[in-house]
Length: 320
Image 1: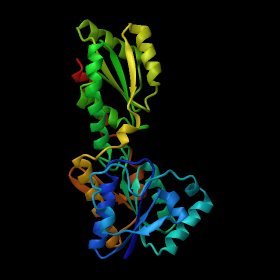
Image 2: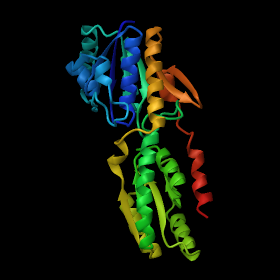
Image 3: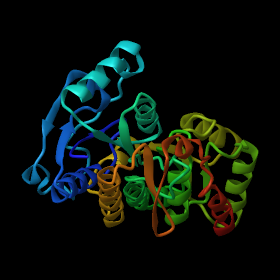
Image 4: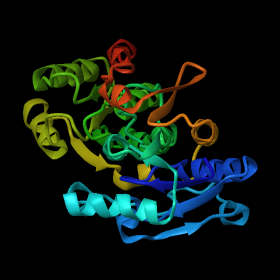
């Protein structure tokens, strides 16, 4: 295989640039031509493709976001748009494609694979919601960003004897919330994977107040089955405890990636190119423990996410 392409799709994640850098430089080292596709599957459909060289990826390993830009593509889901994407790849004589993104992006990669395109998927999403890999690119940075914010929030929460509900991202996966709650010493974590009980939350806050703890932090995943402001209103109504909401939002998706994310992204980028060079394709790369792995794309997407949910109980234990 001599000509390959790379694109980033869906939400951006810190570390995507490190992965792009690794892919470009590994491809050139292995005597392959590498083409960057801008704006994800939309850019593929529009033919926003150009060959990349060493200089294109200089000084980007530390930068958040993605130099290739990203987008969510409705056109790719249509027969016409998908057919055009296939035609563009053929027109540029791209023999293999590396897709960096989350569940939706790798599902798009699988769709291309079933149409005969040779693809490799790299997990790039802060949500950490792909079950086949222990960690996804951007997750560690997102958790550390949230932890930094919680340090500031706790100061003012303590000053005002206040309960603060901190909403973190993650869509339908509670991994960011769990790790942030444990690392930040939060009293309660609410995640989509576990049922929510307002009575239990209120009881914990009242018991903590009776022990002399006048301020508390609740970490709530955005996908938990109650709106953050609704939760705050219920806490005030039922306990009399002052409660405020802080939504961290997109600050978790930006910023310089942690060393852990840079190394993960670089390792997976290298592995993706190596697989294509050896004519191994239609795989998703990831990590289990300290081992780099690759699975059939369809198999990888079918793995249920459950690794970090067991840690949720630690929040209750440590909040006594």
